[in-house]
Amino acid sequence: MQNIADLFNDDDVFKIQNALLDEDDLEEQQTDRHIENKIEEILDTVRENYLNGELNSEEAFDLFYQMAEMGNAEAMTIVAFMYNVGDGVEKDMDEAMYWYRRAAELNYSDAMCNLGFLYIYGQDIPRNYEKGLKWIHKAVVLKNTQAMCLLAECYLNGWGVKEDHDIAFDYYEQAAKLGNQGAMMALGMMTLNEDDKHFDREKSQELFRKAVEDDLDRKPKCYPVGNEILEYYRGERSF
Image (tube, rainbow, N blue to C red):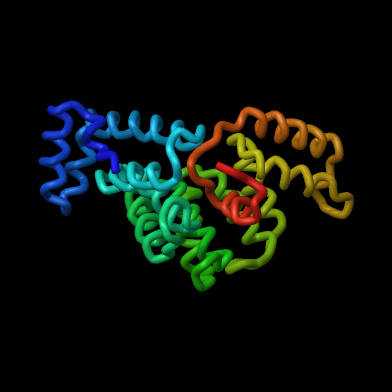
């Protein structure tokens, strides 16, 4: 197994080892921007090599796990997802939830969104609307567009909230304005429905056109967020 420290120079390794001596002092680890930037740089390289097949799932998981232990929230979220679906490691929902929560506690909105998704859908864990909505709202405050879409779905279906299509439309619209392709598609469907108060055929066509253009420009990442997990499970989306 490759050790992530091998990718740092000697001075970096010394700083990392000193920071990791006190595991409770997570805040101090995160204040060293030099180390943070170096970890992010390596994470980007590992992600690229994983997505293009130069690293297999097991190799990638080992490296992401080491970066997660160093306090990187994105790496924690990737590790959580890999435990979530059993990619590169045996599926373990306890570990998945542990790493999602650790990343969420660092205010990483993708992790909050995925926690919300798992609770709302009861995906591999007991359904709990209260807990799901708590995490989704936290992610929405941080402008996470997938969380906005999840909250819109909750209002569309009355999941833990009173059904309200107007509020759902507003959340989809917020997400669409921030470039979320799924929100554009959802709004396109709502504005295409002649029985819906938001019916607007011209707007619907424009939303669908924009959604297709944005999907072509979408950059892949190592893990899905929110409802993208459902597409991953169904084999409709790869990462």
